[in-house]
Amino acid sequence: MEALQWMISLIRQKWPRTRIIVRGDSGFCRDRILTWIESQRDVFYLIGLARNSRLEEEIETELIAMKVLCRLTGKPHRIFRELDWQTRDSWSHSRRVVAKAEALAGKLNPRFIVTNLNPDRWPARELYEKLYCARGDMENRIKEHQLQLFSLRTSCHQMQSNQLRLWLSTFAYLFFVELRTSIWKDREAVIGSRPPFA
Image (cartoon, rainbow, N blue to C red; front, side):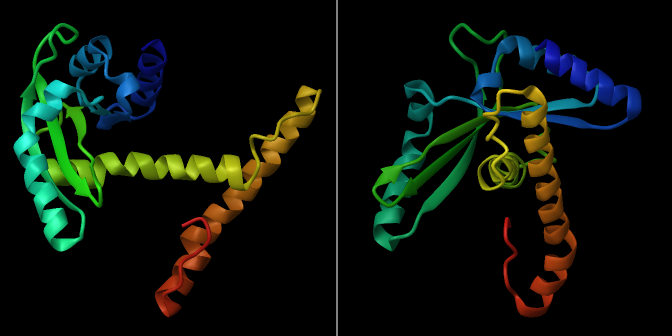
């Protein structure tokens, strides 16, 4: 919580009129955090909400319908639903929850997010698919840095050596970002190929 307040205050000092959207997984879905964000001007949240039996019961009809469609067509199907949701005892008031009822081959895949973004500006499907799922894509960029460029390899006994390794991985990553955003983008437009790290 304190780290979030500190970061937002730093952003506000540099860009006082910027609209901020805090995206995170269910670890951030705490009443204290959500209430603080709600009290800030032009700060919004889009946070994963851990599924539970009560939430799943709310979208049971939609889950069954998607399961039937998935079996009939052999393809995944999803539908979104808005909920005005209140936890039994952990939230101070009800909040907007977007539920995704999805059926994949052989399994159901319900997901939930909580937000204070305006439903007129951000309808359920667009909110989930365009704004929330982009968070997962950011995590892919972090994994590229850690796994493909070995930035986790900091096993030297001296801190300076580990720092140098991290710098080298970061410089290599910045090089690939530049390739992706300029050189490969032009090439993709010409021949339709996908760049590495895309």
